[in-house]
Length: 497
View (spheres, one colour):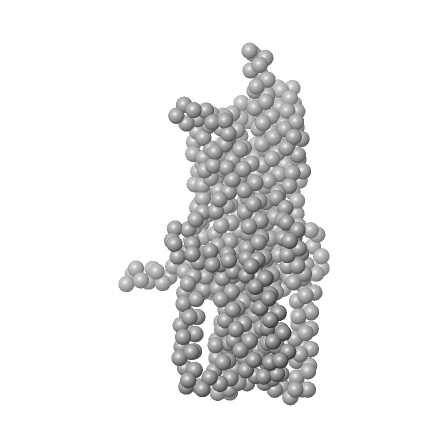
């Protein structure tokens, strides 16, 4: 019984994350190494085959072929709609297809965020692990060189400057391809406050035309179909930019890890240090009971549990089809269910995105502080820290809207809204109008949160690129200094020889 309770309570609890940078050895079995070993960055593979399989499916869902396939499908839907758009069955069918696709993408997006968080925290732990070794060895070098006179110190800095110029002090991390830059630009367009505002202008314009159609079911179905098509596109687009930016981040990390491991290797050559890099453990953040509940739900959705539940619902839905004579109400049932769940997932995704980002940002801030101590230790001027572009009024308004949408109480409010919609549909005895009540508003709200999710993703991606660029430049600077020390030792040995 205790084991069962432990398994049931595990999701949402969070777990400490540990990481250790591979130790660079300079000599093994009396063989002197002439270059670093274990360089570059490689994401850790998950132990369970099922997890690896699911991660592969998630990556494929965000790939270019899937994205363009969905675009082509939307085009076919639009062309067929010229002939069939006026029928209720066509409108309901499209709503159902959209709801199911969106529900599946909801689960995949949650999985993406869980994976991204775990990977970023593991990266931070590895960087901090190597910083501890850098600090230990630089402290030893500082003790040895502190006794040297200013002339020798000046010579070391001259040699370091030569290496710095050879490396190129303005070195940049890998750039995106032109297609990647285009998609990134487009993501900033979709996530802009102006686009979000334009979306609500369109919604209110639709509401304003309601009296012309006597607020009929067909009037609601028109909006449901339009929002369905847009939502499928946004989900596919969001999955694509998340995977694309994750791949770009890994390329940047690969460049950083190569420089970092080379720095460790040369420090070990200079100091003779053979101690292994320390294991760094990042404890799980403390959260409130409400936040823990939200994380619990997200952990369930991010596994096969959410997909299994969806399959069970679809089977049940198909089974009751003959009882309802496969009428319009029957068609709407699956869309209603997936729409309500999707709306809740929209609230959870934004909350989860913001919380996880704050945890990762705090760890990158620690790296900034630790790096500053390294430069202070060896009396080196630290490179000027780059920052995100100047905050504009629009950006501040977007951030404010993001924080409001990400608050845990907003998630609670969204859940209560869903209960209210269910109560309203029940009062209408789940007629088509009642089911549309549980389709159209949730669809509009979920679509809004998907746009906000793009805004949050853009903000986080912009900040992470700056963080990585700053770390990269600091590593280049430290490597130039260490190479200067090595060259100075060579000069001393030549003179003594």
